[in-house]
Image (cartoon, rainbow, N blue to C red; front, side, top):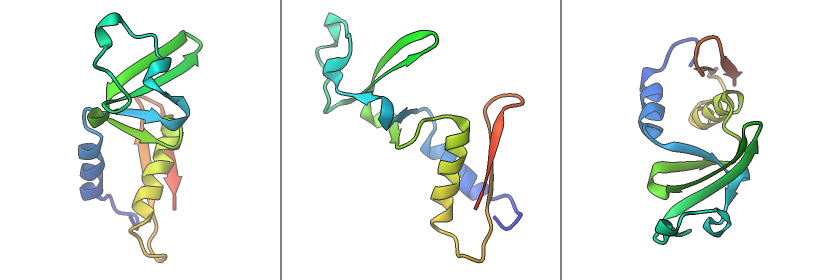
Length: 115
């Protein structure tokens, strides 16, 4: 913020998203739409989120406990995540404050958002 790194907010997001799955509303489906094994009878829409999507590698399905998941309105690309970060932080800023968010997804791949 205002040209200075905000380690407190960095730590907040790191804690919020530590060891969880980030799902996209676009990929969310009812559990009944997944091809689950016969041993998955305890999985339901009350306890789990279900996601299903197609990629160049094929079709992917996932049922994951709700307590281990945050569902976002956008896809979870680094470009969209950096804008999500910026929008979340910007809610607490005054109009006089500036914000630059930099996020990395491995070596040489990242995104920047300004508010």
